[in-house]
Length: 157
Image (cartoon, rainbow, N blue to C red; front, side, top):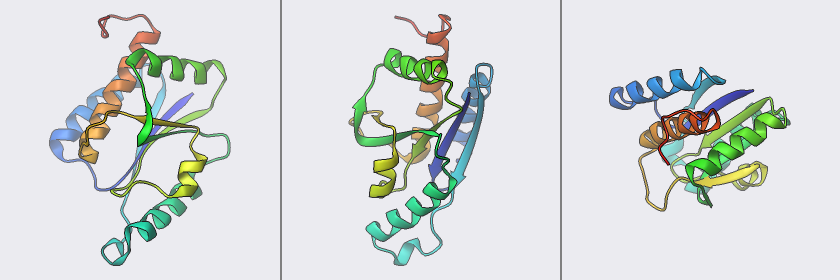
């Protein structure tokens, strides 16, 4: 199985990049893993928030394959404990899912098409975080889930 992290926005700042790279490398011991940073639309400044979400949604939908399992990070999604995330990833592995995609949408969220397409909607927190920090938190939590599934010592219960 492969894990893909997709995020709309700018490249990581150096202080975020170092942490993301560290956890991505650690995840690679368990799964093939890759990041795709999808740039914001060039005319974002002149688009309404709804039009921007539609534009970004078209890009996302064009990149997705029918068999991809899409986990959308969304403030209205389900809150999970680390063990729940580990179970979700393990279930996808057991079901021979080829690719899980964790998607961090744009500044205004995602289009209705992407919301509908998502196989699972996950809320990291009730707090609001900058997108770049969400990337770091996401990478760390997926790594934590991997260690839980392998019964390794990183996660203390």
